[in-house]
Length: 149
Image 1 (tube, rainbow, N blue to C red):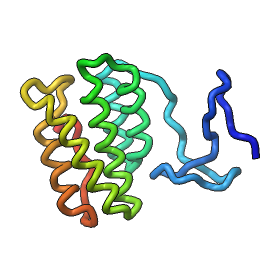
Image 2 (cartoon, one colour):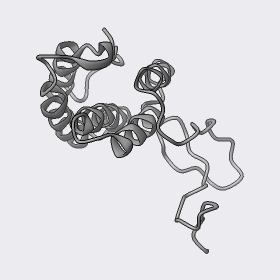
Image 3 (cartoon, rainbow, N blue to C red):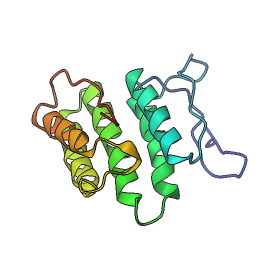
Image 4 (tube, rainbow, N blue to C red):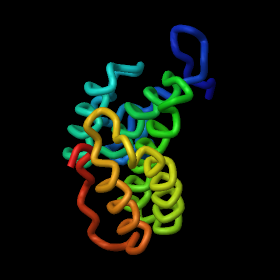
């Protein structure tokens, strides 16, 4: 089967996905994809939080990954760490404890670098604490994090 391509000719999987980003058979009903592209920081955080609250951490990760890839060096680690928090939660929800732990630890390191001056109203201390709890108990019942507390 030929690879899906976007209008610019780049590879892009158009296969439907469930709320945790797992591919579904073509023709299946999927969650509504999030439009790609960077957003103003506050909007990106709001959209990601809404997706997390709806148990769609994979899609929240996509929103934050767009920010990470579009950000300058001053905030690149922040957005990458936020995206990794969502991937850690995705792994945990999929039952991959090892992946959840590894991503939670990496995310806490990146996000924790902004503890002295948390940007965009983010609850950096709370997010680092949340990531630590997830890393310690990746098989537990972890509630979604509040990005702003």
